[in-house]
Amino acid sequence: MALNPQYEEIGNGFVTQYYAIFDDPAQRANLVNLYSATDSFMTFEGQQIQGAPKIMEKLNSLSFQTITRALTKVDSQPMFDGGVLISVIGRLKCDDDPPHAYSQVFVLRPLGTTFYCAHDIFRLNIHNS
Image 1 (cartoon, rainbow, N blue to C red):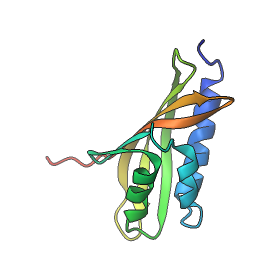
Image 2 (image 1 turned 60 degrees about the vertical axis):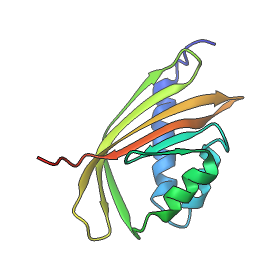
Image 3 (image 1 turned 45 degrees about the vertical axis):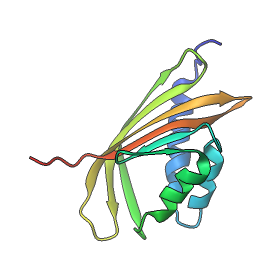
Image 4 (image 1 turned 90 degrees about the vertical axis):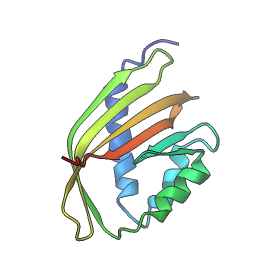
């Protein structure tokens, strides 16, 4: 398979869609459609999770009620299997907590004429110094 020349458009579109769904509590359950039931992996603050049901279990366990987000940068790269590697840095604010910087990395794998999120790594950028 060749490099996908639309990798930047795909990366930006995915990030826009993902956060629009994630940040809306009424829509968050629809994130399950972006992951594979068995072949998706998430690392959330160091916790390793596999498969859409377990990923959704983790996301549904998050206790915040409101989230606001400001994206600093979205970088995408094409992958040799037709997939897209996406790196996001930004700031988020949950409920009354102070804003925190965060980073998130996604790997999208081709699935027919669309993609699924095969890898998702999320980490708040909090330093103990």
